[in-house]
Amino acid sequence: MAWALLVTAGLFETAFAVSLKQSENFTRLWWSVAFVACAAASFLLLSAALRTLPVGTAYAVWTGIGAGGTALVGMAVLGDPVTTMRIVAILLILGGVLVLQFAPSAAH
Image (cartoon, rainbow, N blue to C red; front, top):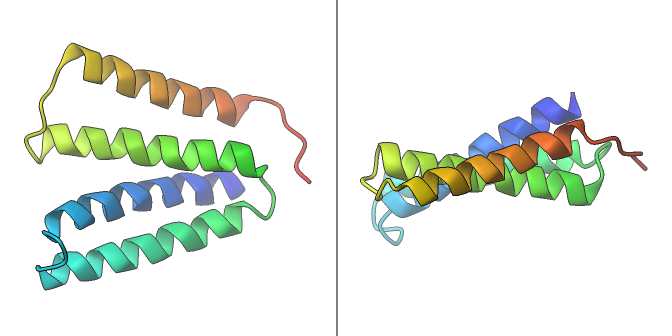
């Protein structure tokens, strides 16, 4: 259950980063509201996941999903440049997230 919470938190991190960009320095009301709502949801879900997951692993996975997801949305929707190096970098980030998810760890 903690992993599902963490992955969802990472997806909300992607959403809050994109909403922040779209809010245009908080001058667009609904994108600003979306940013606050997604940020709150992301942090609440991360906090819940931290009840059972190690903080280093959880934080790395959360930021990895957020960074990779935001880069993908930027390229697919917002017109960010698509290059081979960017794709490779995103794959490395997401690969690291998967390795962390399946690495054995003892939760405290």
